[in-house]
Picture 1 (cartoon, rainbow, N blue to C red):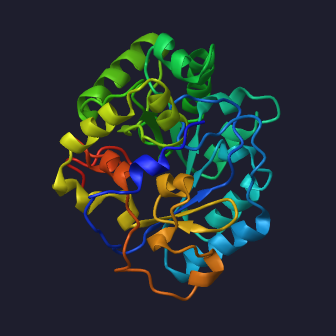
Picture 2 (picture 1 turned 30 degrees about the vertical axis):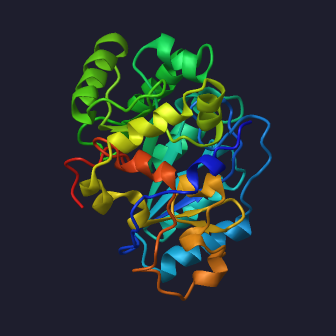
Length: 321
């Protein structure tokens, strides 16, 4: 795999600092039941890295001490961590809002048939990846048959009340571009998703999040192998909008890797770029104030500020900050 870091580290991206922390995003490990070409984590079925329960307990303590409202669980497939259910039950027991970033195919994976009912039973916000509403585009990104398995997974979640008005069970979908281009406008694409998924599959959901592909890990390596890395970076930089700086996710979120080390965002985690540029563990910052601290940046950060902007919660344009 091509290393993108030498192409990103010398950057003119503007300096930014942290605001009040409201979300701890925890990467529970890189194990996943599928492998996607746009995956910035390089997750897959052969990955062995998984967070242990002691580190999860420390993350909960960190959230408690910093008065955090939300745990954002990611991976890989977070549910494949053997301590996933313990973490969710513990977090909900402390009245934390919990988000699970799942790929819907996990619901049909042997041994994980419990996922949908477990999430519904604990009223977890489900953020499900579905990079397009057509089978051809999804299967190109994620592998043969993934679209149909995803559709069946989403239908099962709908049957439990997810995405259905009045249930309070929130189901949001995630779109990633299928190549080296920016996402289309989020609002209009959401309407297309809702219309076509309902008409063709009877699926309902709450919101669509459009997320820009980052030029790192598997996608960055693909760009290099195709000779398109420089053109993609030019696209991101030419679309830079300074007004998006206020809403970038790293201002209010910390990312925790499976070993408990802290980063300003999930993308920095994958680049090994530690929080504020200094390698620190959860235990090192249980007491320390982090508001106002500098955020580690490099050229990939232009991906979050290009066009309508991009964050874990989708486009920034028009969002309340």
